[in-house]
Length: 79
Image 1 (cartoon, rainbow, N blue to C red):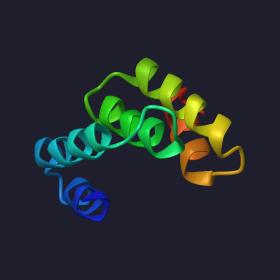
Image 2 (cartoon, rainbow, N blue to C red; image 1 turned 180 degrees about the horizontal axis):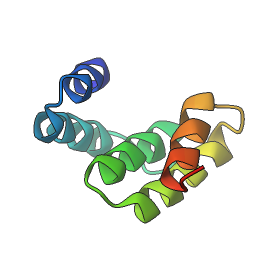
Image 3 (cartoon, one colour; image 1 turned 90 degrees about the horizontal axis):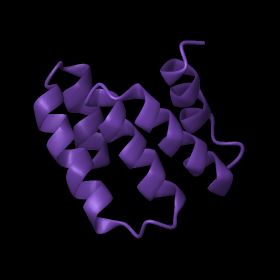
Image 4 (cartoon, rainbow, N blue to C red; image 1 turned 45 degrees about the horizontal axis):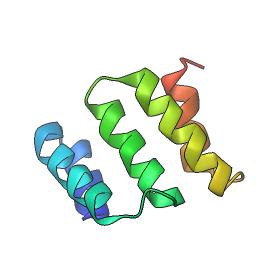
């Protein structure tokens, strides 16, 4: 699902990708990196950058060296 969502985003099919991100987040426990990372993507592509940044920050607590979460956080904050 994650790869499919990433491909859909690159094709400009945001609404379909959001469905995949929602499904991924719903299957995960809310106490792990993946939950916060995919919730961050869901918020980001929904246009809610503040909530996305909060989720990426939480993801980084589980994986402090993760470049994807760090890059996405910087994007949310306009860096």
